Amino acid sequence: MRSSRKRLKRALLATLLVLLCIIAAACAMLKSDAKPQEWDEDEYGPLVPHKTFPADCGICHVPERWDILKPDFSFDHAKETGVKLEGAHEGAACLRCHNDFGPVEEYVARGCQGCHTDIHRSQLGSDCLECHNVNDWRPAGALAEHAKTRFPLVGAHIAVACEKCHELAPTGTYRGTPTQCQICHADDALRSAAFDHAANGWTTRCERCHFPTGWSGANFTHAFFPLTGGHAGLACTECHPGNDFRPIPSDCFSCHSDEFTGAPNHVAGNYSHDCLKCHSRSTWEGARFDHSFFPLSGGHSGLTCVQCHTSGTTGPIPNTCISCHSDDYTSAPNHVASNYSQVCTQCHSTSRWEGATIDHSFFPLTQGHSGLTCIQCHTSGTTGPIPDTCISCHQDDYNGAPNHVAGGYAQDCTQCHSRTSWEGATFNHTQFPLTGKHAVACNQCHTGGNTSTFTCLTCHSQGETNNEHDEVNNYSYNSAACYQCHPNGKGD
Picture 1: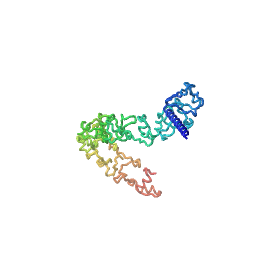
Picture 2: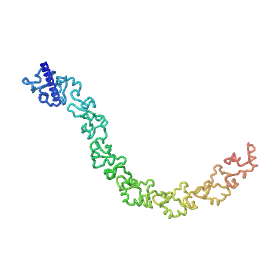
Picture 3: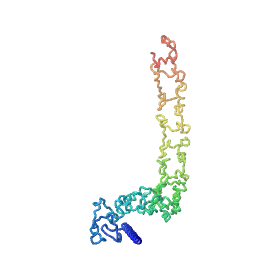
Picture 4: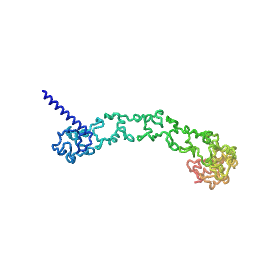
């Protein structure tokens, strides 16, 4: 009974020793830097299980000693096994993979995780090569994989260790990490000496000013008020004194009131506070006002503002001629007395007063009308509209002419007279040619003193015409009937 216990005790001790050796060898293999043909007793321990090793000891050992491996040990892994050892695997000690923990084929079948514990706890997938390579554990492929997430690694974030953002990385937890800048950089914002982030309420959305490459060189996108021209390159504090970045007015005067006050005539002239009406964003000099609503051309070009804006203000003023030129109008000959139009451009140009001409195309002043003074037609002393019929100006001429009133002559003088002269009046009697016996004075046919009516019966007696028309059907002795059958005055 006692001997059985001793044998059991020795067996347990032997088993424990073997386990300790295996554990020691395993630990040594995980950290060993020994070359494949070297033996390191401190690393591998005094005993390494050989159950699955080849029976030919001379493959590895020298004949004299077990603890010395052959210095010329060589094994073409690719040729002998069909598996090429690449990267860090090429220089690893054989015992790192070939030991009595189990058949190496089982480890290979499980891929990287057959030998390497997955510290990520399968949260990043089972393919280690997506981030790592066979040379070392540094995650060379992590950038590409991280780009597929909601937070691509760019700028300074590339060199940051995973656990700096993923606090639970040592336990293999990567999911659920926040992406807001302030989560990681709250202390950076509070440490800023150039800008009080907390006082201005800018403790979030760091990307408004900063770039992933670094904190320095912060630049704010000022699209709501483009910093162009003279505003480009200004320090923030020039508009936001005291690093107070709360909203400020964006109108010109809010920043440039001193320039406005110090500029000549601006206050006295009540100039507009909208500086862009005259100035550009680049410089104050060369100010120019867009006067397109009243072009400053001709005689108006080169005038100073106060020559028109006499009240000392550049606000709206009347843009009619007389509003500025009432003195010129009053002092000009006949203008007031003749009540000339106050729209000066009817006669004058915008270049000069001299050489005034009026566009009388609505009633051409040709021939007898040319050279007349205005008051010869505009007898009332006004140049305003007057009737443009002949009789409206030539009533006296009509009344004084022989037979015109008594004969009821037409008051459209152009029927008989030309525009050149009253003399030599002729009437176009083409509708009834005055030839032969009909070449008579007007009142021989127009007996009623009116040229709008006529009679044939004065010259043609009824007895004469009855004899000549005794065989004519529907014959009637009256002037209208005569003209209906004899429109040219001929007997046939």
